[in-house]
Length: 115
Length: 110
Image (cartoon, rainbow over all chains, first blue to last red; front, side, top):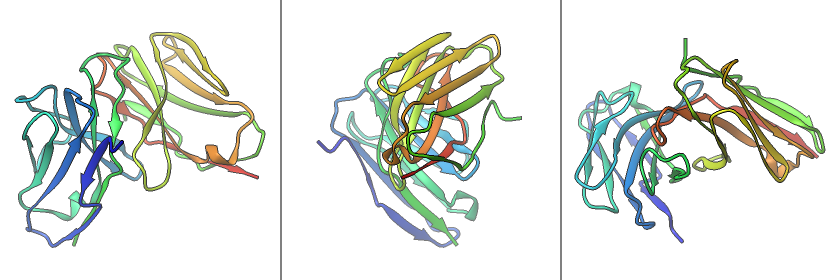
């Protein structure tokens, strides 16, 4: 009953370092999403993948890249981390895309600090 | 101006109280409206959803949408300490590309 699994749970980076956040879902969902959550800002969409093989930019894509490795896995890469990327990152998945009765299932987040 | 506005709270109420949580929005094309609940150090989980205007009830929870006023509400009856969490409103034009409010922190005191 894992649902959406994110690794790592915590990470501290220095400015300019790179890293990849991993996400995997075991619900056979088609669409996957990366959000960041900042105090007072709510959740903002970084990138999403409506289906295996496709990715699209969300509201705040600058400084990030994504890879939909297969149906289960969707990774988020920071090529050169900046302090402004300090945030909590959430991965989510959903059965469909564009259907109101296809709710997002979230992981428990990766807490990233960039110094 | 943010597309979705939500009072961040915190909102502190005694156990058993009726809680009202609200969001306003500016995009008249929104037609799917959701409420997510987020416990500390956890990811959000879907609590309620409605399509277009109207009310929806599920146990102690009632969601209301007033598209003419661009205003949505979540009511919690007989609030419990276990309801203490952050409540996020979310909405979209087409389904899963959601725009979230900043979240309201709710504390229910026993």
